[in-house]
Amino acid sequence: MKNTFVPVGVEEVFVLMCPGHECTRNPATFAKLERILAEPDRKALEIVTTIADEKRLNVRVYNVSTLKGKIRARLKGVQTTPTIIIDSHRVEDEITREKLLSAL
Image (cartoon, rainbow, N blue to C red; front, side, top):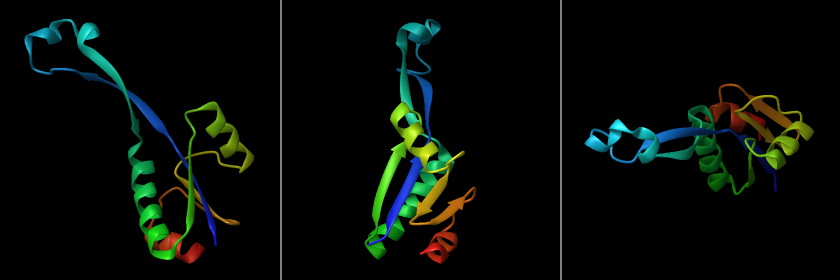
């Protein structure tokens, strides 16, 4: 069974609890911090999980926003996300279904 390594970036954004309401005059009181998956990483992860389900691949996802995830990514030579590693094959930058299938 092939192993697939997927480092992903997580962004932090502030979200107003009740946008458009009078309480937004003091947003520090009514804002919360949320962590979201970066859009290119979200798309890549969606493609990877679809192919993994079809081909019964083992997928490991690492959050490079954490120290542990950064270390794992660096040990595998990952400099940027999205990067997908399938055994010894590496797919970087724009992740497409065709690129991933050709790496299998």
